[in-house]
Length: 64
Image (cartoon, rainbow, N blue to C red):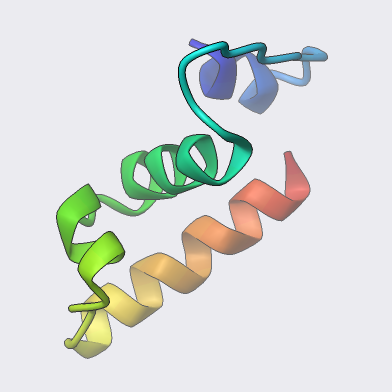
């Protein structure tokens, strides 16, 4: 929900007592890129399509 709100130009803050910042970043990156979380965590991004999706997701995260 936070990502959807940020995409609409809303200011968003996320507080989590369960996950560290890096874990949240990976989950959001997985969601935006469509690449499974375990693939990202394992470093198994291999195809050009996955790299393109990852690059676009990182740009989106930077903009938000």
